[in-house]
Length: 269
Image (tube, rainbow, N blue to C red; front, side, top):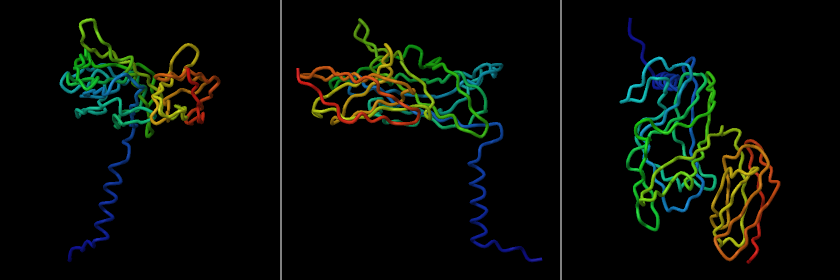
């Protein structure tokens, strides 16, 4: 019997089916997506050299961790290719994706970032190395309660505060002590607006009770304070010079929504 001839359309159908199957989530697995954003700091650049991103699955600690791969001991590696990120490019509502990976479904308790010695800050055009006390060995662990549903997605935003995380020591060296908030992306809201005059550099703080939850630096007057939990905030505006500090109270933020406060007029001193 003569063999069946495969037509181009039949071959295309086979390839489409194969690639379509490769994108499906394996049974008992879900997906973790991590995004990164940053609050402003008094730097020109804050460059982090990241070597690994992982998440800790509760109840899977029996096997010891493999130091060379970062796996075992309950750790699921989300990304292992080294990459660099300048935190100051992630201001005013800008995000970058740190990792997207399929992992076993379940309850996760920590996110871990491992950093390399190439991290640095740039101040007044001068590059200064940043010492990473434990980031290379054990990594920086962000504690929380995160559930990855089978066949579903856990989408988290890491809000890195560069101003609080980079510390100048008495010996004149810089060390990294990360201050990072972790919030589910779907439940995060934001506040946006425009400061006048728009030529005045102004730092904007979102304050809840006595805590500064987020901040932004105006760009041509525009600002966005992102990754905010739902709630009521005060906005404090601190101009760089010649204008008075200004506060707006009672700003309500809803999950997954942006609150626009419009134009905010500064008063000359």
